[in-house]
Image (tube, rainbow, N blue to C red; front, side, top):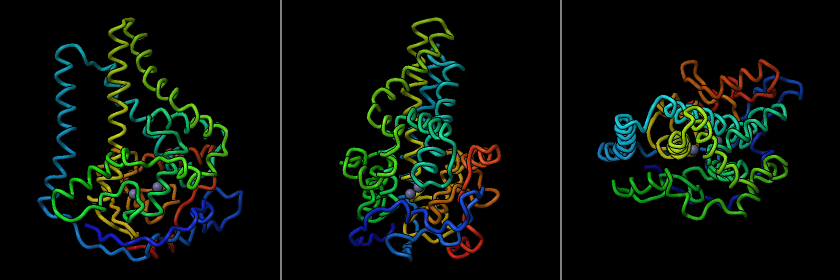
Length: 344
Ligand SMILES: [Zn+2]
Ligand SMILES: [Zn+2]
């Protein structure tokens, strides 16, 4: 497990500091930054090794068993007519699209300003991300910026490494990182004001924050309405609500949470970072590129997380397509010099 160090009193969070290193003019399509953002809280990460085999086996069970159980439920439901291709589409299609709203919109655009885009593209990504039911953009980004400021040190809202050693504590830490942190008093108004003042000023993001409950209602009702209209039945609408609403939200949550839990424990480290973030192939592919999490912690403002050619990063491909069609610009990428500086 990672050695936890006391973090000095944090300085005021600054978006400007987060995106420092911009060295190209306003009209540029790409911004190649030479200076990666500073590594809080210490430049050198003290890596004290991977978890033991027993811990790995236990954690793999924690991760894999619920997924197997879900697959079994889907299969059994199919036998009794409670599942079908329409609902598979609403479940996985809904996850895929709203998941991109989180990765391209909430994460790379709003949290890290890793590219700039048209107003309508901003509204689109904010809305699609909001439908994932992971909180309003303002609250999500505030929590996420706090994660970067303290990553795997005291103050990090969802580190798996803040419990003592041993297999039981490893599981406790993992569960805390996955979803336990949600019920430990984060998402406070004070944190939102401190970490996302720039986003609170945006009228659309502010509206989504104030009216988030209605976004949640819409996110659940939309698949119910679609399924009801396609099947022209009330039972179809109910199954749409079940699979395209609740099951889709649950699945999307686990995908996002896995970045906080799995990608701070399992995988490889290619770059120096002040935490235990990892590059994880499975979640790189499954989670729209977010599993290249060590790359991301080394270069938080880079629009591209899969930095090697073989590291599939769907969110980056979409940002690249937006840039090619004039919808996005000032797309931030680390220069060769920056990559060399952080290489392990
Ligand atoms: Zn992280
Ligand atoms: Zn981030």
